[in-house]
Length: 252
Image (tube, rainbow, N blue to C red; front, top):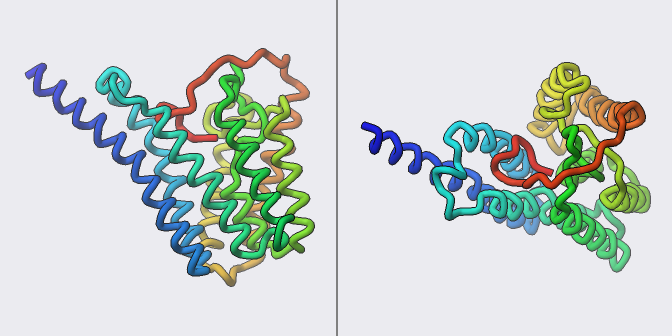
């Protein structure tokens, strides 16, 4: 009986790793959609990748995945998947959709995204001991989504991208939505509203209700403002190495 249960847990662990790995498929399909200028499809695929990344962590912890499959590094897999979906795909979309300026300036902005995020993903102090992200957490999928919807001039979009890329290198602390303790109840409640509003906008692309977009943006404003407020009122503890892997609930 014990052996059967152990085998079931081991099989479950491998299936969870497969579930995480399916994110590379969504990235490939999203890149293919972008080359065909099917940007709505690409954003939907990025949303699917975000859902996978948000749900594999609890599953991994439930089966004690490192104990069941010690020969496989889920953290490395998770970082590969996340870099593809949160960095590579949105950077390519911003170039292809004309969100960034054409030519070398746009490519330079894309390179800034890729390089800054490569640094951010490799930091061993990426999360603080009081469970915040250190530096901008490479949510480029959301950056691409909002810039696409807002329709700002490419020059302004480039300025936003460069500013966020610089923030990756700073010690600024950003809320880890479902782990940062202060204001967690409010953060998660607003995040639920954000998810509904953002999903509605996504479904309606390229045309959408502006009220839904601005409702979604309110959470983004809350996220940045509350992160700054909480940082000013925190003791500023040193960061500790925390693996960015499948065991995390959400990725950078």
